[in-house]
Image (cartoon, rainbow, N blue to C red; front, side, top):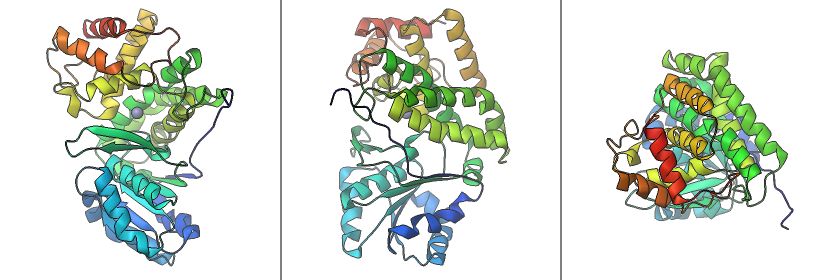
Length: 359
Ligand SMILES: [Zn+2]
């Protein structure tokens, strides 16, 4: 078993302007009673259109709104409210919380999930991971679906309508993947699928990096103008599909481990996940003793994109030595630390953070 390696990905990925219109066709094969789990804010804007699209395909959707945090109790409640309906598929529509809620409900009902992200702020729409929280807004667990979403539907008109800071954060989440997959391949750990990586993980993570470097700035500018262009399409594919399949098959490493510490850090804890990962990627590169010129070049790219490159920019102004050590301490509790060519200690992480902060 120790030599077994696993590949995972969504069964279908559909991206383009107006892709939402295909939702009815995509879920038609899963019975006539889909459950739609949607953000209250997104329901106001898109709810009627989504119901129309599904009804036009002869489906009778049950629509549930996720109000508040995505907790086990909230997912249990939604699942219980539709259990007698004979649901064949769950469709999650909205930002991260609604998608996680859709995944959590599908897990409870034992049926497939389809994700429809309305922002591209991270790569969770393609993955089988489910981020669950408690009532105090603290991450409680990362649950795993039996399989990845059966379809991921990314309507780039919706992505281009959303504020560009979501897509900017998505770039931060994605930029780490090439280094994390390389770290996993060089180290001794496992991917989130629980095995050593196949070669395809690094290949996808590298393709993600190449696409980001080629299209991030022009794609962001298009998003600012609320325009769907080829650069925006390529950027969205990198942020949602390549980044998601890159981490799931390539493995996570120090950059994502650092988000554990940042989620508890003063001021920084309210920054978006992708903003955490952007800064944390610099820390990983320093800890890996990457050439200084290469780290400087990466910092310049993150600056050009508008992502944070210091703790102060993440919201933690003037971090104290004790606060930095605490970030390093919590980081050491993450499961991805074996995914580095050379193992690191709490002292190494503290030193790497101080180096990034002193640049
Ligand atoms: Zn991430």
